[in-house]
Image (cartoon, rainbow, N blue to C red):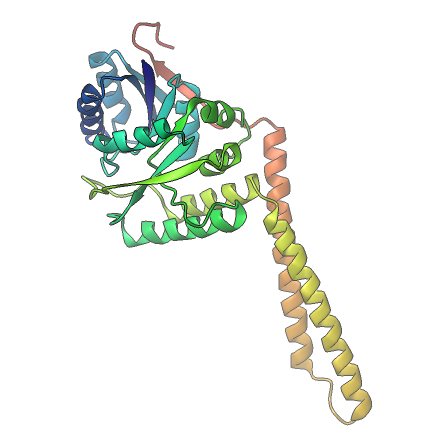
Length: 313
């Protein structure tokens, strides 16, 4: 009998999480060919989410609870859950009920067909306009920077095989980006269409700051394309500057009475100065992340683990 491990990052979900767990439980009763467990990771939620997790762990012997010492973000919570999973298949989904746990059989069927990873695809997303815009930017970034296939849709609801998880958890640097880790491990990935529900309560925990941080994690941790783009822009700017300088000299030789022009000089200085500062900032971002990684800054810090049948830590 194969085992399915469900990994759920939890934040502000003290009321919605029990519904998600119940839905998983009811669905897995119909899939008798699998045994399963759940790993619930509390990302230092300000409400009583971990109290809810503690209650669920008491009521269900196949649920493990993990609580972070501070907020490290969704992808760090996923990494913690993946490291504590031992299933042949691992399914990751949200804690707000928007991702339909009762359609997990569609993802598992694709894994059984031979795919290494399966992402849920939504025909009609129920996210806010801001979240949808963030998803579109993330889609563009992963396609350009991480070489994601254009026809592959990525979401927070996905399933992977154990060997993919084993490769993903080898990544120990400070800025995990789960999509990049999956794409690094395999290209044998497909989509399956599921429903997307409206949020039961609250709003998305992703702010502009968190989305920007997530995008930076993606293209600085798994791609050097930004540096190559910076090099190309620098080369083009140098060529443009050289041609403009040659044009100015020729114009001066042909017509000595034409003034050189203070505004054009300042425009060129501001343009090239801005480009230089932008490139230096990008390089600095890479160097800073390398420095933090060399200092062994952790992906997350676990305050408490609730593991039924074993001594709590």
